[in-house]
Image (cartoon, rainbow, N blue to C red; front, top):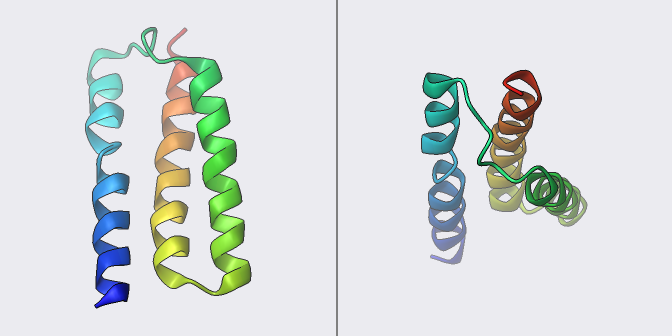
Length: 82
């Protein structure tokens, strides 16, 4: 039950970034995305991923691995669509 909660929470918080990625891709604009916030957020996600790897918590690794990829895409778009 506890692992299911972890997977569910990770899935929902990770999927929350998909509409932002799609919106930026469709509009070719990331001007309203805060660069400072996303840089800090991406660093935090990378640290959560490291924590999950060290503690061998697969729900933490899975959620933060995908979230790191999605936030990386948003940062890429932020620089590409300047």
